[in-house]
Each structure stands twice: as C-alpha cells, then as structure tokens.
Length: 80
Image 1: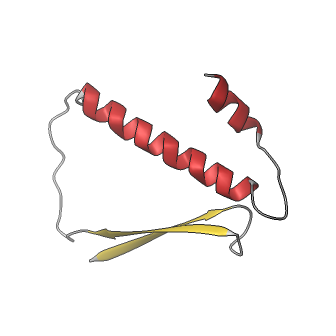
Image 2 (image 1 turned 90 degrees about the vertical axis):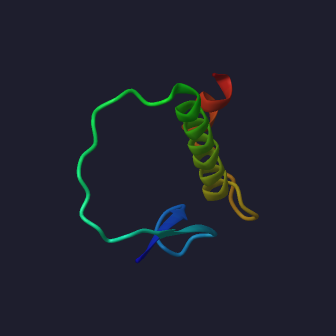
C-alpha cells in the first residue's frame, strides 16, 4: 500500500511551497515489541534531520518573492 503525506508551508492549501512524502508500507497486523532504549547516535541523526527539515519548511513558508515574515521560532533556532 502507498501512503501520501502532504505538508503545506504556509496558511491554507494554496501555498507557495508544498512537500509530498510517498511512503510504501505493508498492511499487516503488528505486534508491539519489547520496550528498550533507542540507539543514541541513530536517534540524534534522526532528530537533526527532522529539525533541518522543519527549519526549511518554516523558511519556505515565510520567505518568498512577495512577503518576508520571519517567525519568532527562527530566532530561537539560530541562537541555540
């Protein structure tokens, strides 16, 4: 089966930038695995990848040819 996830960067569905993720998955019943700690290096890489992606989406939503509206989040991300 295929799942499509659409992210609109901005307000509404008629935005300047849109990301579409297409995810392949099997439609099988799943059982919950044992609880364990996540691998630290792998989790840090995933968190970094997701934070960069989120920052790109914020920039695409707020900085285009016509309007520049920097969000308050952007200052907090660059100061850290």
